[in-house]
Image 1 (cartoon, rainbow, N blue to C red):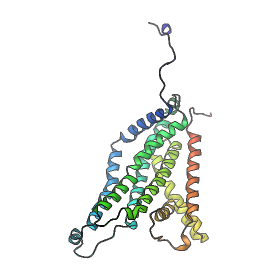
Image 2 (cartoon, one colour):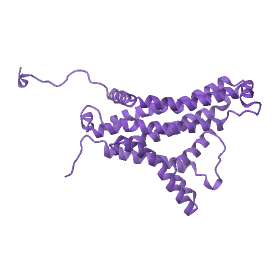
Image 3 (cartoon, rainbow, N blue to C red):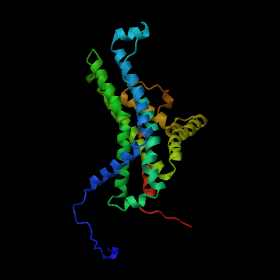
Image 4 (cartoon, rainbow, N blue to C red):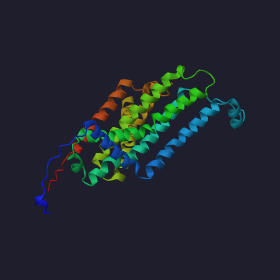
Length: 290
């Protein structure tokens, strides 16, 4: 039968709710992110430090085992400083995961000119970005606050004295500090990947945006003798923020300590700039000027 003899009608069935459409984008983005063999391999590597920390917790709560390992030279305490090291380690490993996963979520759609086709479906630009955001957020959660809180629970279980209720601030600091870091990584990873079509280049740009401004901030601080240059240093700011959230001793000199309000304002500005970048790049059409 010829094509023109077919009668075509609009779909009259039940439509998927808008929230469920975001879940569809997130589900396919998850498959796209974890379809590569590299992603599970990176995830296994990020769990190795957590296993080392778990062994450390076991030894710290078993004097006999500690004495056999250290030959009686003493042990170490499981406190806020210990969990600060756990949080820092897992969060920086999350940056590696972001540099690999984020370009796979957006760069492929832009490189293959698939974004107009995706947005021609009943999904908004906000829903598209939110679906990708959810996938990256879930992936980074498996690397950051999930193992951190599991180690916190394991310490509460292993400690011979009541420990967990007396150190709830540590758990709150681990969760809040990891969530702030994850949100920042998601915004930066998606925004930078949206502007760089080549995945390898996007991976390098994600690393560069963390360490190049940090070097510039260090130069500004050294030349002008001011602490405000550290506002360009994301690793410096996050370390200070994590120390505050976990209640550890600030190891920086007083003249280098940044106000907490200034750190939060810079993080909000960074997320706002990333939102503008995504709004400018994620479009249902591409304009080519000849």
